Length: 255
Image 1 (cartoon, rainbow, N blue to C red):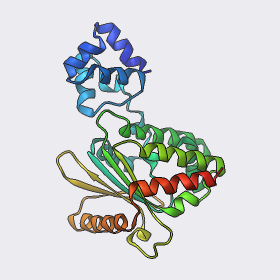
Image 2 (image 1 turned 120 degrees about the vertical axis):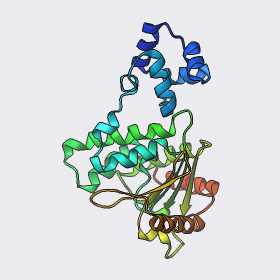
Image 3 (image 1 turned 180 degrees about the horizontal axis):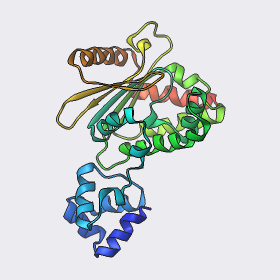
Image 4 (image 1 turned 180 degrees about the vertical axis):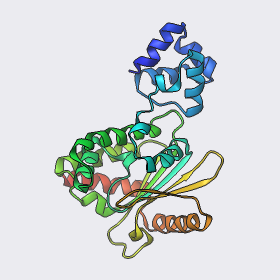
C-alpha cells in the first residue's frame, strides 16, 4: 500500500477516479498505484503530485537515487526513462530480474562490499525493478548464457526459486529472455556484459560493467560496436519460448 498517496488523496478530496481524470489515466491505474506499489511513468508522477500539491519525492520517495553510487546515477536515469532495454549477461542474471535471495548471494559472493552495505544494495536493486512493474514498462529483452542457469549462486533452493521467478517474468508481454546454449562455442558475449537503452527520443545509450564501476557509453563508434555485439549474441540464442522451456527444465534440476 502506498500510504503517502492514500493520505494525499484523503487530504485533498481526490478519489482514484477524479485523480485519474486529472492525470489522464484509467481509474484502475491509480488503484494499482495505491494497492500494488506500482511506480507510474515520470510524467504521470509529476502530474499526480502536482494535482495533489505534493512533491513527487513525498509520494514516490526516490530512495534508490540516494543509495546508488555516484557513477551509477546517470545510467539509472536512462534506465528509468527508457522505452526499450536490451541486456546481455554472461555470468549472472540481469539485476532487473533477480530475486532477493539471488541478488544477496551475488553481492556477498562478489566480496567487494562491506557486509554492512549488502542489505542496502539488495534493497536498491529490488527497488530498481519497479521500472518493469510500472504502467508503461519498457520492452525488456535479455540474452543470457546457459552457464548462468547452472551456476549454484546461493545454493539449490535459491537457484530453483530464481529460475521459477524468471519463468514467471517471461510470461509478461514486455519481457523476453533468450538463452545462448552451452553448445555454442566462441561468440561476442565472451567479451563481457552490456546493456542497450532506447530513449523516448529514439537516442541509444549503452552501459558496460566491470569490477570497479560501470560506464555509460554514448560515442557513436562505441555504440555501433555494442549494437554489433548484440546482433551476434541474439543470433546465437534460442527463441524466447525455447529458452523458457530450458529455464523451467534447469529449475527442476535444482530441486
